[in-house]
Length: 294
Image (cartoon, rainbow, N blue to C red):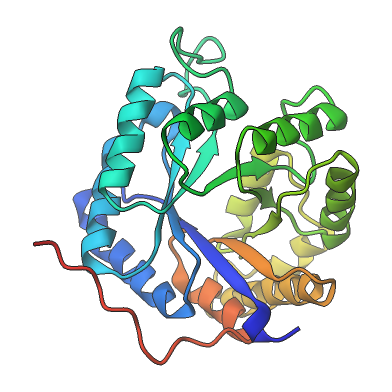
């Protein structure tokens, strides 16, 4: 495999305050020369970051040249409301939607399903497909979703999402490539033929990755504990170690025939850029001209 075979996409999250707009814009501009398939912007539980997501998409449309993606969750929201969000995305030039059930807002007493809402992500995909042929990604879990009744049930849920019209699946982050490859085999045996793209999480904070892993059921190798021990006070060394770990993971996947990667950037472009460079993805000579609002 060569760098010409590799394609990437990136995930960012909207800033918490207006002061974060420029730093995020700078993040996306730093990633733009790597020619991502899309850069997706997340959407909080129950749509809690909806306004910030829409404002972020508008800003990135006006000040960068990337192909924009956007998350869309259905928990706690009516179908009519979601339809309006889809329309807003199309008005903003969004070219890719990541369709998710989403977690109930913090403190919710039940599953968070709106009485007039979509039941789950597969139902959401069906609803989107009634309105649009926009490319859709859905979530996949190599180590099984923590709320799934079983691994078989989790695979069946993924198949329902693909059969409803999703174009591909993006996985939760993982660190054991053997686990991912087994998951691909299991998905194939279950009749899932759509591409399954590995989600890569360069470690910006070891304590942070531990918390994320505990919430989503991902496994952090014991060896990482020693590898990152004592590096909180040595940020430059920590970044070198993190970039090397992620690059080695991606290179191993590339050697096994995987050519598409989705990076959870945590709005930190340096690590993701370093990993892509080590994979042979070099910035384009000509950076796309940013769109200008008229």
